[in-house]
Amino acid sequence: MTNENKQFYKNLISISLPIALQSLMLALVAACDALMLGRVAQEQMTAVSLATQIQFVQNMFLSAATAAGAILGAQYWGKGAKKTLEDIFNLMLVFCGAVSLLFFLGCELCPEILMKIFAEDPGLIRVGSSYLRIAGWSYLITGVSQCYLTIMKVTENVKAGAAISSGAVVINIALNAVFIFGLLGFPAMEARGAALATTLSRVMELLLCLVLSSKEGYIRPALSRMFKVSKELVSDFFRQCLPLMGGGLCWGVGFTSYTAIMGHMGVDAAAANSVAAVVRDLVCCMCNGIGSAAGIIVGTELGAGRLEQGKKYGIRLKNISYVLGIISTAIVLAVTPIVVNGVILTDAARSYLTWMMVIMSFYMIGRCVNTVTINGVLDGGGDTIFDLYSLIVCMWMVAIPLALCGAFVFHWSPLAVYACTCLDEVGKIPWVMYRVRKYKWVKDLTR
Image (tube, rainbow, N blue to C red; front, side, top):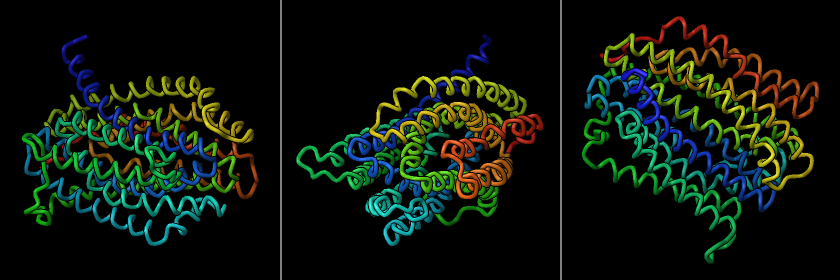
C-alpha cells in the first residue's frame, strides 16, 4: 500500500470512527428507550417510538443547515479561512435556533394533534402526548448543540465532538433507568421518565459544547457580527441548504409517512416496526460515519484546489460503500434471533418482527451505498440537488404510493406494506452510480 493510500485510510478511520460512535450512541438512546419501556408495556414503547417521529422531522431541518455548514466549512477549512468559518457558524445558529423554537412550541401547545398524525389508538395518543410535553424542551436545545458539534467535526476536533455526544448519551441511558423504573427513590415515570432523561442529557451536552469551545483551537460563533454575514456567503449557504432541506424533508416526511402507515395497521405491526427501526438505526451507524467522513475528505481536497485527488477519493469511497452494505446485511440477519426474543411482544408482533428483519437486511445494501455516495461524495462537492430528485422519484412516486395503496386500498399484510417502504433505497442504486460517473460534483465551492 502506497503512503498516499495509507494516509487516505488513516484519515477515513480517524474521522469516520468518532462520527460512527456518535451516531451509535445516539441510536443507543432509542434502543434503550425501546428496551426499557418494552419491559414496562408494549403500549409505552410504541407510543414513545411514534412520538419521537416529531424530533425526526425536526432533525431534517437541522440536518440540512448543519450539512450545508459542513459542506462549506470543510472546503473553507481546506482553504484556511477561519473568519469565514465563524460566519458559517453564525448562519447555522440563526437557522437552527428558529427551527428548534417552532418545534418546541408545537410540542408544548398541541402535542395531541401531533400524535394523531401517527396513531389512532387513544392510549398511544395519551402516552405520546405526555412524552412530548417534557421532551419538547430538549428539542429547543438540540439545534444549538448540533451547530457546535458540526463545526468541531469539520475543524479536526471530531474526537472532542464525539466524546461530548457519547458522554451525553451515557448520562441519558443512566437517567432513563432511574426515571423509567423509579430507581434511587424517584417515582416510576415510564414514558415521561424517558422524556425527562432526554431533556437533562441535552442540557449537559450543550454545556459541555460551550465549555470546550471556549478553549484555544476551537471555532466559536462571532456574536458581534451574528447578523452581519456577507450576502455572498448567505447565498452560498442557502444554495447548499435549500436542496438539502428539500431532500431532507422528502426523506424525513417520507420516513415519517412509513411510520404513520404502519402505525395505522394495528398495534402489533406498529410495535414490530418500532423495534425494527431501532435495529436499522444501530446498524446504519457505521455507514453514517463513513458518509460524513466522505463529505469531509472530498470537500477538503476540493476546497484546497486538488480536484483530481478529490475525484479519486470519491470513487474509492463509493466502492467502499458496497462492502459496507454487504457487511450490514450480514449483521442484521445475525442479530435477528437475539432481537426477536429480547423484547416483550405478542406472538403476532414477534412474527411480524422476524420477517421485517429479513426484508430490512436487503434494504441495508441500498442504504449504505446511498448514504456514503449521495450524502458523502456528491454532497462533499456541492451536488446537493441530486438527492432531492432521487427522493421525489423513488420514494414519493414509487414507495409511498405503493405502501398507501397496499395498506388502505388493497389491504395487504403488514409485511407486504413494510416491503414497499424499503423499495426506495434499493431502487436508487443504478441512478446514483450514473450520477457519480458524470463527475458534476468535482468542484471548488470557495470564493
